[in-house]
Length: 377
Image (spheres, rainbow, N blue to C red):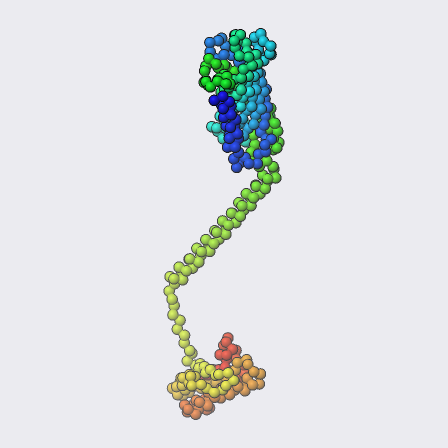
């Protein structure tokens, strides 16, 4: 297996970075969401040793990249201070790539700003280098080991801008195997407690904030999006009003249609007054057409039945032609009706009075005024 475990840890880190770059975070710049920290504390064997008696001081630095509100990566290097007789001040250096999961944001939604107190779970693999082994004379010097770590970070995010974090970091580290050997295991006898505390500074992002941000980074973009949303809301409200007006119109038309369907049809009986008879002529003509004879026949019948009745015949013309022509034409039309009454129906001429009225305005349709109106009395 040799160095394959470290290679796997690196691949996991790169794949996690790719997986966490969602559409929501596509505008985040690479230089955003970085932080750096310093740590100090103790490391002591997990088993078969008194906790404080065998404890040694440890210190280190870490570089952090937050990829989402939940997930982040840490590159950490810790040095253990040598408490034995040795040529080196630090007897071990442990360089690790750690994966961090923010448990607060896993179980409750991230609201855009970190809470005062948060808990992170972390785990990863690394490279442990022993500078000068202090074991017995046959032990390895300058040995290289595969190491692993799992623990928790209890974070206190301080300041109005949340630019600083103070963390308490209990963890367990394992010395798993020496490079060049294939036997890898998590053995409690090769593990140690690591109790440290640290201070982390969060660099300012392109948004001007010191904590994790994603999405649009510019105020003008946010303002443009808000304007678009407002415009869409106004448009939707206008369409709602138009739809409501259309529905009201449809309802009114439906009511009118129902009223029309239910309305009783009234038959209008058209009658002609007994004392008025109309004879229509063709344009520019004073000759009575055969189709107009029934009207004259009815008039003659009335005059015969009522021997004391008289009739006034008024001739009219339509607007075509000049006034003189129309006046003479209206007189001829009145005389034409009188002539038929006298010659055909033997009505006494002294019972008939004729007059030409010129252009008529009796009917709205001008052509209907080519007529003689016969009124009895």
